[in-house]
Image 1 (tube, one colour):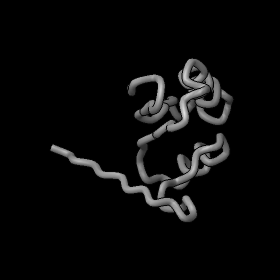
Image 2 (cartoon, helix red, strand yellow):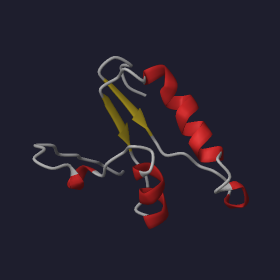
Image 3 (cartoon, helix red, strand yellow):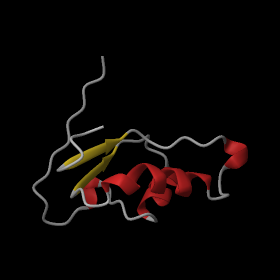
Image 4 (cartoon, helix red, strand yellow):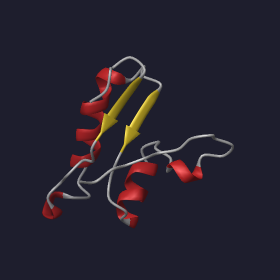
Length: 79
């Protein structure tokens, strides 16, 4: 989701537990983001799980609170 030019949003990658750690998630993420390789802002929203953080950081994502000197804010509303 997004405008495909300046920003793209991804709502997590889900892989069944018995298929994790076999490259499925990496392949899915690459396939989904490939058309948006030139988009400057690629935003991912996911659960707060240490394994997910490690997965996405290994693929170039940075948790927003860890971006040095960034004047960024993220807001969510759950209804």
